[in-house]
Amino acid sequence: MSILDKINTPLDVKKLHLDEMKELAQEIREGILKRVNTIGGHLGPDLGIVEATIALHYVFNSPVDKFVFDVSHQVYPHKMLTGRKEGFTNPDEYSVISGYFNPQESEHDPFIIGHTSTSVSLATGLAKARDLKGEKYNVIALIGDGSLSGGEAYEGLNNASVLNSNMIIIINDNEMSIAENQGGLYKNLKELRETNGKCENNFFKTFGFEYFYVEEGNDIQKMIDILEKVKDTNKPTVVHIHTLKGKGYEPAVLDKESFHWHLPGFLNNNECDMQEGETYDSITTDYILKKQAKDNTIITINPATPGACGFSKEFREKLGKNYTDVGIAEEHAVAYASALAKNGAKPILAVLSSFIQRTYDQLSQDLALNNSPATLLIYWGAISSADATHLGVFDIPMISNIPNIVYLAPTCKEEYLKMLDWSVEQTKYPVAIRVPFGDIISSGVEDTTDYSILNKFKVEEQGEKVAIIGVGNFLQLAKEVKQELKLKSGIDATVINPRFLTGVDKDLLDTLKQNHKVVITLEDGVLEGGFGEKVARYYGSSDMKVLNFGASKEFTDRIPLEKLYEKYHLTKELIVKDIQNVL
Image (cartoon, rainbow, N blue to C red):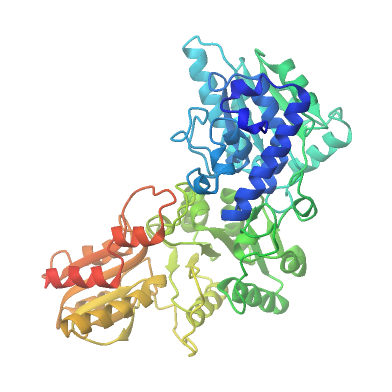
């Protein structure tokens, strides 16, 4: 029987001697590797935190003592020690367990956490509530893998440091974010590492934390020793540990960025093939490189997710000083881009849909209110089978309802490149572009649209009786619905590509009243506050019937895309049935 077979709760970890814990660490790594090799997932962060997690459960008493992991994609070892090992040892259970903290799975996870830089603030709240109730237990925040670059981490540290009670913050310093760490704080972490935590310049001591440093953060005994020392402390305490991201799997150690998250198949050299030929990522990077070569005011910005946007190391190196990775700091990224644009540069900020949510105030105040002509590229905006913390369905209501911002939804390569070039060169508006999600589509015809004429929709196919407005990714669905409707009802519908998400083409919508009875909208995002409601609101006082199709206002969690499309009636067959019912 393996050691892991004996571990059903953290209490079982406490029964092990050191050699057994070392064996357990190896078994945990094997489980992580097999799971990620089978279904994909985070790899390097989890491999690097194994020993520290074993020590945490050996010393502390979860769930009485509270753990808050950040980024919670370091949580695989914790899950394996808290009754969820089947999600890493049994292939049939791999997809049952999520990749993040999840209290619906276990009482050992106090929060649902997927985004980053939140642990210290959450742990401070737990500790304060504990103190107000007169209770006694440890609260431990584990923050690392680049999370310290996020603004909320600083806010949390500022308040945790004056709590005057038990609060333990473990800084998991693996010298990495997703890509390399960025920013001045990480220079201090390096200085602390090089002096074994003894240099006079100590970021954490300036806040007032008691500070301890552990160079061998992957040594179980040393981690047990320091955790036993700080356990039951009565003051805010930082334990700074140096760990190796990817430990136990040499390719992940040698290429930490690529193995931060990985597709399945890497162990047997049978990786899922990357898409060959052009992608929306590749045409974006090609455009930026060519544009920057002719115009040194072009600068590309990314908040710590370069791989997700196709920004390879080679691309970043070619741009040199014309590329800024701001770290996990989307709020700063938007304000930074706004100021760059105001001062005559041409910033292009690339950010994922689920991460742009962090920066509503900067979009509204720093960018839109100042009308700075920056370009924002919003990636991964779509209904998807992602977990609840990484949904890309909320960007349209968020961005399209802020004054001054022009939000565009291209449907093909040619539209995207034309919109991108117009945005970069114009000086009147902040412009966001919802980068198409999925395989590249090419019309084969150059787009000559003048996008300075705002909110002008394009009639792709003229028809009558029914008008189908397909937004961005869903223009192809609109064309499929047209064919299905013609087949089932003999109706030759009009197909419209709106291109603009921030307004409606009033002239075109008025024209439709002449020979159309129903207008339907299809959008790859949440309906409430979205594009379709703008159309429905415009027709509100008329006799035109409007059907809006898109996602419901809800947090979905790893639900297959086909099931979501079925639920939301986003198939050509179900849409046609709904149209027939209205007619």
